[in-house]
Length: 360
Image (cartoon, rainbow, N blue to C red; front, side, top):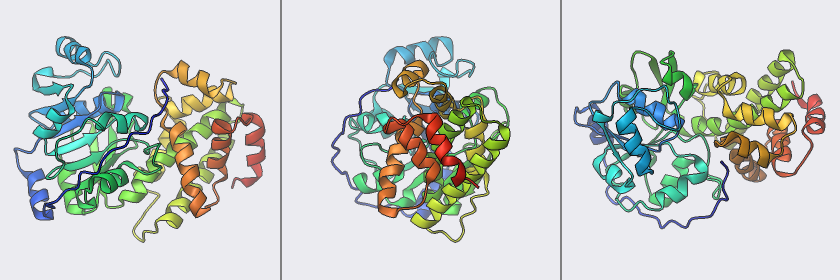
């Protein structure tokens, strides 16, 4: 459910002693490395399920003590992915974020972006000697920056110690153990390769990337385009049109990434880019497509948020990208149309009609 977003002032806690790449890489390969998942929503629960297949023990920050008690008793999350069977005996769960962070080497943040800063405001444990992976599919709404950029700017975490985990991968299919692919992105490929071993199991295959900027922004952008796909579906546009819309969205995303942060080795045809865009725009499990479909049916933004009772990251990402693009002026007609519907009160049908001649 959508809540009012409050700006949270967080004092920087700079990492004074940078750990060498060699030390970090060998920590990941050492049997005693400890992973922790920060968050307890559907995607966090899916990642916990995956890591239980590869790790002897796992730390898990669950902010609700009642939820912890329920998981220990019933072996599943009461609110998300109830079909995902967990093993509480191997889970060190706590509602104290500092306890979880203190005990782990690798921290996987998986909190909805709109709640991210308020959740970590309680964090007082040093992040020195930690490796941070973001599995958050959005940006910091009050800052218009990505999660890795936030950790780098506010906490002084070097990008050598930051990573991103992305799809194409819906939590619901992970819960059903349907074959899925994850991409682990780190600045150094050897670190990404080492980390990827922790996520590879019978129903998860992993790939790697070194394009932190490209992958993280692509995760944000694909949610915006899924909103557009959902709106158009409910307005009566068919599969032929959807193919053109998503093709145009792909080019729009590629153009934005190339102009804001050029990278000669970026391949946007890979699954972390194109694949994630496709599954988010087409899948029945896509909450962003669902949110867009409700808008196309005539729901107000507020009514759609209340009906879903879950966070659609594209709603917040739309404003972040719109504000960020004021500095770059990259042509983004689809993203602009979504922003107009969400934040300017524009009529979805009329807005999409004005978009038609801009697609290719």
